[in-house]
Length: 168
Image (tube, rainbow, N blue to C red; front, top):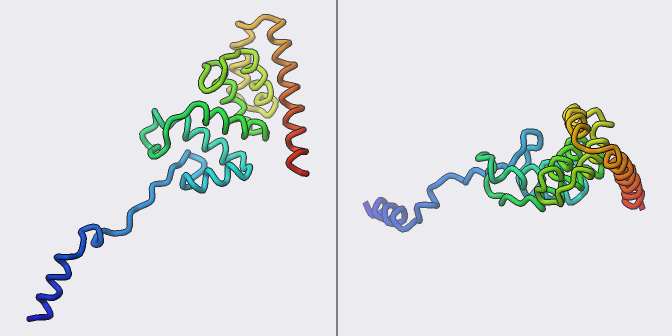
């Protein structure tokens, strides 16, 4: 009888949280990259272009996608990580950089820079980039399109220099 009273006392003294099962860790995930936020951030910082793209997605969509919790919406951080992935040749990140520049989300609004990013993505076969280029062809004049080609080439050169710098 004493044994049962001690057990009852012990159970009464234990906090309720001790009875709960281990908490389920929510994975902050994009449809492609199913990693917890901390691992995703670590991979992005180590130069993984897909992780950079997915981290940017989290920052950009966190305000509108109810599946994403625990990450604050931040367009500047989204732009930073999309740019990191884009500079490594990630075509979807290049496309998203164009969209950000067209909308002025997290970066300066600039249709010429957007066109330059679209040229890079289109060169890698990104279909939506070709569609958006066709739309911008009707909006930008010949001088602006020429400037976009120059800027696209400069982005390509910058990307190559960056790749060599990382090898050193």
